[in-house]
Image 1 (cartoon, rainbow, N blue to C red):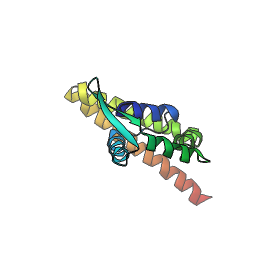
Image 2 (image 1 turned 60 degrees about the vertical axis):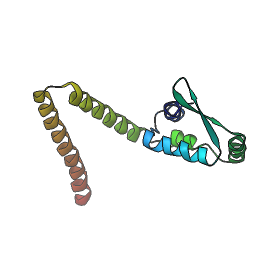
Image 3 (image 1 turned 180 degrees about the horizontal axis):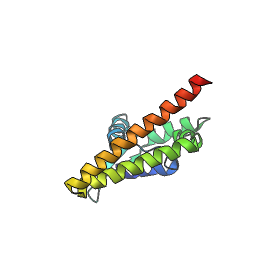
Image 4 (image 1 turned 120 degrees about the horizontal axis):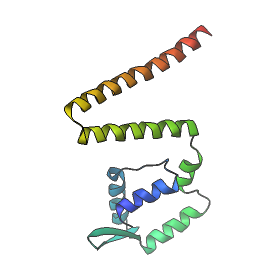
Length: 135
């Protein structure tokens, strides 16, 4: 796989719960290559990585009793928190779309909406804190 495929595969194996960034994947791939656990080659203009014999041996040692990291992430998510995270990502994506294609007026309106949303979120937390204190 090339680096972007690794990113996609981790996200797929965790049902979207683990979204790694290129800034964490590529240095990790470089480190694994330096350790001799993976090797890379240029294929159709992309750097493709594969396990070496040492990498396969390490993988077999880790399989003996340990769960894969993505199993822990995929199985342990609170649906409410995952829903909140997904909503925040979608909101961020919409804001970035406005930033890339919106007019100045649209960007100004978007900033106002986001600032208001932030205030409303803090107000929700304040309501919960006030309710707990009165209990």
